Length: 117
Image 1 (cartoon, one colour):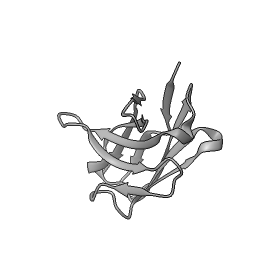
Image 2 (cartoon, rainbow, N blue to C red):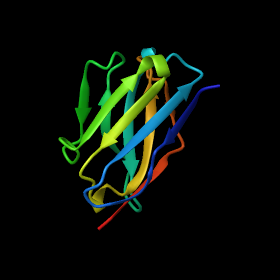
Image 3 (spheres, one colour):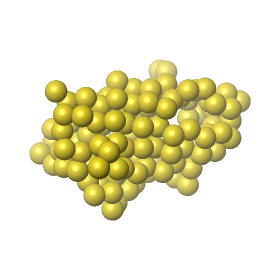
């Protein structure tokens, strides 16, 4: 059974930092590119960051460039999202997604990030 479990969310003040983790089981993480999405209340889910299977390539939404870093440890079957200089606009539920080259994908259940001003 494939499971993606996000953790590390919480309440933080504006300007603070958080590190999200996505622990994956039931699949070989190195075979999947990974993505972090977020969804704020009343808004559509949006792509925040992505990373290739070997970690050699990353991409970011313009709104988080320079503040967020996605990285992975395939040996630990975990993907991370390091977030700095958080802003109230970053408040959302953050989800990780595993994407196989064939298009098969899996979602985690999400972790809440709340940034107070």
